[in-house]
Length: 352
Image (cartoon, rainbow, N blue to C red; front, side):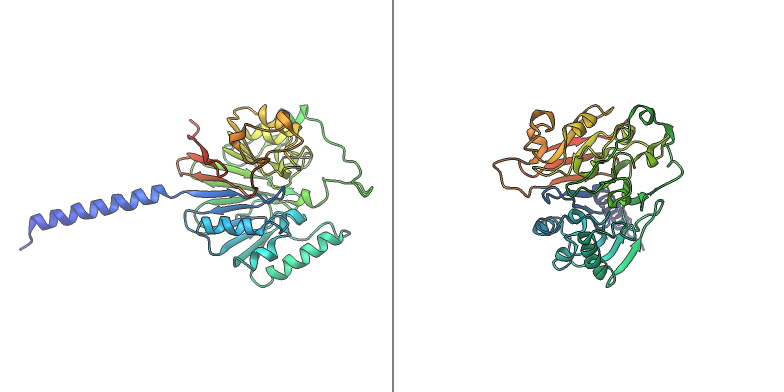
């Protein structure tokens, strides 16, 4: 004979277990770490599934900081090493990092376009030698990086953008008519610095989606090139978080892209003497719907015209560098940004 009281206790226990599992599942977050690599780029993403992705590694001098972030996040291997393009401050640290943290899959845009530059050739040869030993994926616009737990959509790569608007996007972009194109001049070597055809133009632009949360990371996508994604219509839609292009420099981050995205929060991966220019600061501050602007570094030459509020800056003069900005995202769209220099944090509720 079945004991009814025992059966009820089993049912109650099962219900409690299910509630606990549901709560744990709901509590899982997508965690991102904007790592200070002194004006280079490195972003660590840790999926609710436990898989990890690193976008770029800086030049290699600050690889210890990426390792520290991996340890803090409990990451023992990098499942997807994404190289947005082959500038030294993006790909240069891959060999040194791989020697410390194993990498499984290497993701890039394909062939290097700056073949006449020995620095690029050296970086690409070192990177490709590692990629040949693991899994290697060359992505194009419209591809998804197959990480589990969040969606990683390539909206631009190898100089080509997605051709059709994403769901909910497709609105006309008035900034296309009001924002002038930039004319590039000569670099310090007297060579035409054409950002529309160099490696910056080839950079992987990644749209990360987790539940109701959306983040765009355009790597070093430049001022004129972003028109191919946002003109005459906005093919991406709006985002909650925008990582500034090219470290916040004024050869990128045009109103064509920034204002169309209407980000609530913007983070610049700048250095103390690089990026986060006054022009970009003004573009960001005038973006519709902006709530806050965060920076990896206080820009020494920027003063009040190109620096946000101190609590929103991870590394300042007179303090040790190497502090990262952490973003923790819940599936309902809520996300919290934390400055590890002073533990200041702010939570942003989902858009209504």
